[in-house]
Length: 495
Image (cartoon, rainbow, N blue to C red; front, side, top):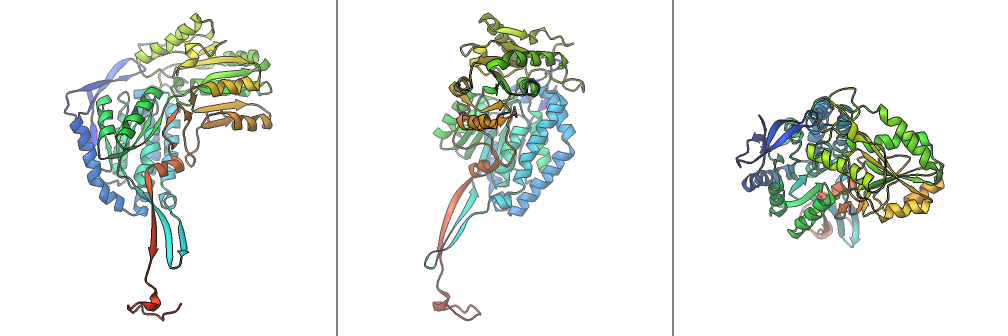
């Protein structure tokens, strides 16, 4: 059985804890590898490696850091197909989704390449007589990233690209469900010229996470995952004096007004609800039909569903792959059964999908007549289940969005510019799409939600990411007056 190790101090390090976890091929249901689970001592070794590398990496010039990021960017670009194939083999998403993930992660590396500009400070000459004041931003030290299974390449790049470019050293704890991509990225960073110890990977479970959260040499922690875990990560990290940005779960609404282009909205709902088998924190899971548009919208979506081919991610004809584990597949299927029992109408039932083998497949599911009190609406389902809710007015739709405890992303489909502008003003969400179903910001903005979708006060990547991975310092300087100095300056003294 293939073993997946740690990456510490610039090399692969086999685990010595005696604990491992299974890594499956979701398309076949068969175990393909086992991943080492780190002990406290192995986490400490990774942090020590990062701490030892910090002084030299912090002293590296901005142009040198940028050069490494540029080289890394080129290596990732050249090997997109290899990374995508690795993603598909352990996560299950189809190759087109995997290629999209690599592309969106690469955007953040490209942003980090501009670190010489991003770290420019401000300067005020003559703030007082003979006094200048200027600001600089400096790295924190050792920082850690704890990342989810659904985007094992993109989300780490959200974090480590900016962190390393700013002069920090990094310890990554990827999901134990699909851990191999983290090691591939570590090897590419080394090939790009990143010094040993600047980037480290510790595989593992809660034990590794807890040790990173309490380790005195870890200065900041970034996390993406479910809301209950995000809350716990944030509380534990901050209790130990660390900076923390913890992105939680979501219940993303797509509001469709009566004047919307129904065909356009239906296409968007299908792609946003079922892409990556719905295992995206920005997936549309609640479709809010306003007024008279409901019947036509549901019919248009239903018409499109038979065209979605469900199958292994490495099959070029597949448009949706399996879910990550058998347990998760069964959990999602349970929400479909529960919705029917609570009075919702199951228009399309993904439990009926038939794919050869024992993979973790669930087909596309459309549930109509969903109410706010139903579990399929209250909970983050995180699967290919699209719920349709019907309301009478725009005000009802906004109230539904704002009453949700989550505030990650939302979208509105309409031809009315005034309604769209009012919607972006009214809704309590961190990211808003106007005729765009998944409004993930480009890398030079920042990603993050509101309410229970974010713990901490800074969003991920972009300008807020630069601020998170650095701290400000203000210098106030006064120098002796050259006219009264006893030092020969080599030029006439003038005032």
